[in-house]
Image (spheres, rainbow, N blue to C red):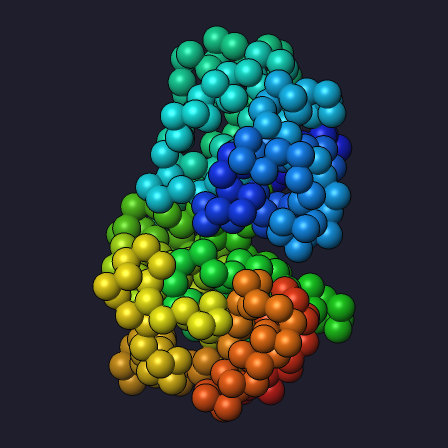
Length: 350
């Protein structure tokens, strides 16, 4: 499944429009081609979405599902990604109101909703509940077979969670397609799955089979494309992250792009965990990706710098400083395009 392009969508985003948990909804607003008719956020209701987020999409922000009904939405998308992936208490009323109003539901949280009898009792013919985070069928333990593929496999890795790995992969994908390359975006999280329609929800896969699930989808597409843009998850620097290593193992990347939020020095949710200098982070990722020397070199070819919190002058300064610090191509691909990073990918040998 994917977000329906022929149905009107409302995004449930309480406290997420300007908070730290709204990455799913904000990414859908930035990248989806679906008709989005309302954002539901009681904290920012009535304010301008472009002014609050910089996303050039003039969608009204309303305080509740009931208020959103004036815009005739047909699908409600839960747009937050909170720690642990549970449904917040104040979301249950909104979910039930949407279902009772005849809307379908797209759920990217860990809490499964499609099997809840209480919610199913509300559904009318034609209504659906799509739980995005499901383990794919017929997965096996990884075997390193992705190394045999002829295509470039570009994996985004990060210094923290929720800093722009998916956005970087999407921007690289579109830049490659504009240049005539056969590029495929490999979704590995709930938002990417909603946008792309296929992929894997990696954090729903049992740990023994996580690398195998990545390998399965990479092998499915690798012979038919020049470049696979593999959406990164988590961070090797995050004490709670389990997704990055299976992505490296399963995809056997040919290049890495490191994503970092400009100026961030510590893990956002664990301030006692520092982020080392980027040169050290690069060494760490390259060493792990090459399995400490057992495999060929896997280079970090560029830095995607998240500068959304900076004005343009400060953003350019941060990019110049990072370029000088690392000696690598660096830009904010959302703000300035991914061409510079794509050039670095294509210059790198496979």
